[in-house]
Length: 142
Image (cartoon, rainbow, N blue to C red):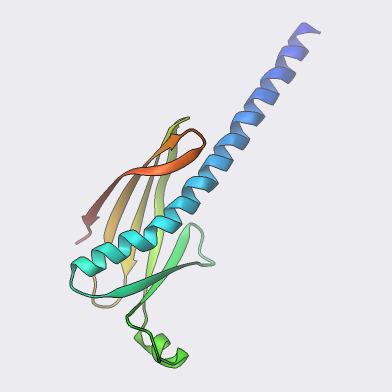
């Protein structure tokens, strides 16, 4: 009887940890999506272009589509905006919650058109209940 009680307690402890990890994973991936637009915009702007990136989900697992177009978009029709768009894919290569307060996500930005593909490594830290990016490293893929 004692061993079955221990097993049940262990099961509940494990289930709680897993659900916390899934919630943390979702929080970090959401944060990653929100920050990705800013990160990509910074790097593209560093190349002398002014763009507005828009991140959307795709049907490909672990992949996001990033469409971006030159600004300003004032007075442009939808067809003109679509004609200006270039597409890119963000593919998550690696994701790990390293500790209860640290995590890491690595993803590749593969782009078509006149731009360079890059690999991003984002480090996350948890302060109180909120995750935030603690560092962001970028390397160009040749």
